Image 1 (cartoon, helix red, strand yellow):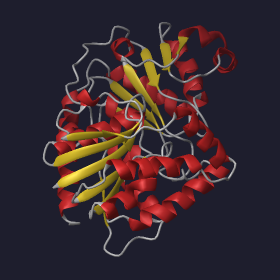
Image 2: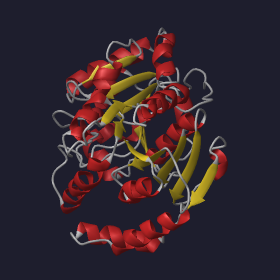
Image 3: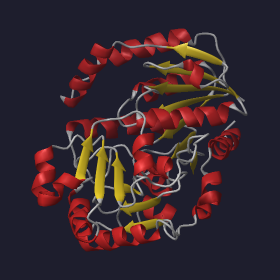
Length: 377
């Protein structure tokens, strides 16, 4: 198959890293060209046949997003689409695949137009639920809902990152007759090197943002209790942008045991220190999100403690593993979970994850997507 992938902001974002791994997987068994917007080092994808850089002005992107928040049209996206159409003029593909995220929408706005121009079938791979259910309604979420209604109804194939998210997203737009759909999980990075035993035995690590319905207060309260048993306990938060005063208000005299760090591109030094990795899902009913950080955590020989909801994608994927402890949004349950993972640190058998790691590999998920796309031709 000849495939054109359209993506935006592949570097420096969590969705961008997912998209790079997906592109890497499908380009190993198909001829793939990449049309991209935003800064990107093309040497990261050596199996891609051709690259087409279609850049937009950062300032205009900012203005366009502001206009959308004010419920106005974005004239700058139209200019970018016209430029993208000129770049691929004369090319023919079997499939055009837009990479979709809630933050960047240029690929979805031009996907169907380019597919028609290239005489191709149209596929969409999304890493987000758009708009995010349970997070409240806003002008931007209303724009997102109209976007998926208008654009996804044209796709011949649709995939997203877990079954619950897939069911939700399919309910937000009119499915084209004969629409094929599937779950393509977030692939795990290749060539991850083990980091040895934790240098700090009672240290918890959380990496990523804390905002909206994703909250840290119950974790901190449970950690307060852990400090009564383990005087050397530490909680490391990387990339959360929380105020120290907020931490002190909840942790009080234990706040000295909590470290706050801004964004770090290389998390390896923190991974080496921690004995337990933390994942925190949004505290909403029927959550449909599966955090990409879990795919970063799983290859390492570390206990994972997940704060999540009942029947969440995290719960459905990881329940039953001895090296993963699932807790709900409950302070006492999180405290007991922390005690359990600390007890298991020295006896855990991480080989139990091997089958799952193989299933989530770039090779497996890329092959799965490639096999799916054959059926829409």
